[in-house]
Amino acid sequence: MTVFTTRPELHGTFGMVASTHWLASAAGMRLLEAGGNAFDAAAAAGFVLQVVEPHLNGPGGDLPIVLYSADRDEVIVVCGQGPAPAAATTERFRELGLDLVPGTGLLAACVPGAFDAWMQWGKEHASVIVDQGAPLGKTKRAAPGGITDTKNGMTGYVIVKAESHDAAAKLFVNHPHFALFPGDSVEIMECLPLPEP
Image 1 (cartoon, rainbow, N blue to C red):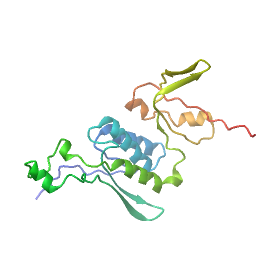
Image 2: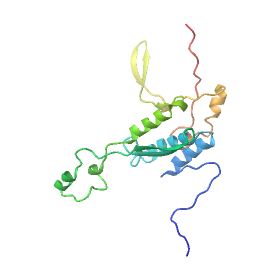
Image 3: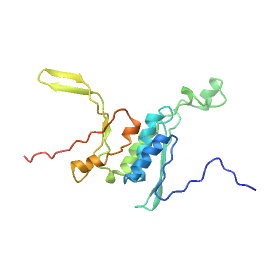
Image 4: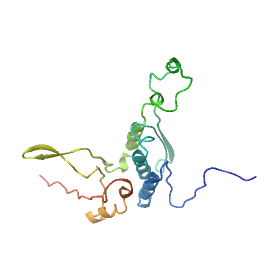
């Protein structure tokens, strides 16, 4: 008898990233190839999924995490599944003439679990995160004439530690940004130390 599967068997010697979108998997793999670890790859893939599949993934969704910690020598599970809203009872659905919870629409919505799961993941790994960065919002310009709105091409930031400004710039050669987001470059700025008082 021939064994049949709908999924290919995959083998690797360096690492592997799987997701529901090839761009997310590619971003995660790029981080592995650049020296990142599995946590870096998972975060990169997760954030890319929020851009390329916003209808399936995002801060308003679910985030189950299963990971292995070599330091602890244990598997860790973070259940970021969203629970049903308090009013989503069997009785309420029956009052609406439904025998099952609909597969789509507002009645199928859950209380988002992804945000709390990402926060839990960050707390669990706080010792290895220098500054996870953030997306940037609208820009204001403060000048002697007052405060005005202005435009800024920067969409987010991350802080890295490197031997020099040039070494920091080299970390971003072939950065996933080029394939995923608008723009043709990543700007690298040096963080200068504050003068001693």
